Length: 464
Image (cartoon, rainbow, N blue to C red; front, side, top):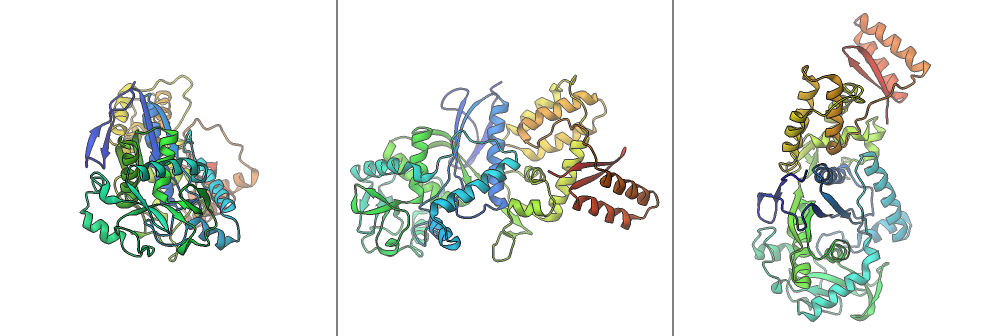
């Protein structure tokens, strides 16, 4: 198919026609999690958006090479160069080694994204596996005069970078002011905005738990966070990739620094398209651990929600818009998902409706316009002119992109205790005893089954 795709490029500040480096192929990198803690649902939004992009390219028959990393060293508690290494912080918190902490939270992340029906990347590198590649890039930058060494670290000299702030559009003096806030004191650092490529086991990091031998100093050390992505991208995907993705918070520091060091070392663009997704809010505010609103997928499951209901909720907003999470909104998303599932019939003899498919394709290839795509889904569900089997075939075709797990549901064997409760609830509804009807619905849900009221009567399905 190989249709036109339009994406909003942070680098150009406008929506552009996607032109791949190699026709029919796309190389994509997403900044992955720092694996010192369970990822919250805002991080899950990032996963779903990236999965949506991968599925969209696959839908229009591109060959996608997608890599997402795991940061398991070097990410300080500040996104700049200050604070404790997050992996060491996690290790001390739980009395484990950094490697044990990394594996624990990688396993949780993998389970979560599987339940969100996200396709696995073909490469998921861990930063600690690419130390040699990082050392090689630092060596190039030192030899080319873009980096310099102090007794505490090796820094990238931002004054040598070409158009350092072109991604963020910020004034350099503002970057300098921000970069200088709270940074580790190093009297030999040339400029406040210079960022670290490598920290030596000295000064504030004298007791660092994760360090490696290096050719730059007799002291062991560890890489800077920004360098890690640059080295992994080059090794796995090549010098220049098509698309680099990440949250908007990465624009002024992390991605700006990636561009500076990669392009200085490689004499080539790092990425042609930069896509950034907005934040997920909770009750209109930024998620907060201290306020108990930094929800994980485990919290979603514990409240009886299907993880795919969260995916449905996330698809309701455009990736470049802030989205507000509430439990009420998730309840609505789960109800909508159950109704969509209940609308499916047999597609064994169905044919995809090409008129609807053309409209769906137009929406998703227009900067991933999922709100319009979902609206089209419901238009199709309500369209009485489309034969049921064609409707089902078309919805399942759309789901190749939406990833909602829509399949023809086989009749589930309903346990006797559930059947008894359903019968009692039906009698309560006929008597218009809505309080009893709601109580029985909650009891059925507590046993692990969802109830959906349809024009044909009650339908139940086992909660995933």
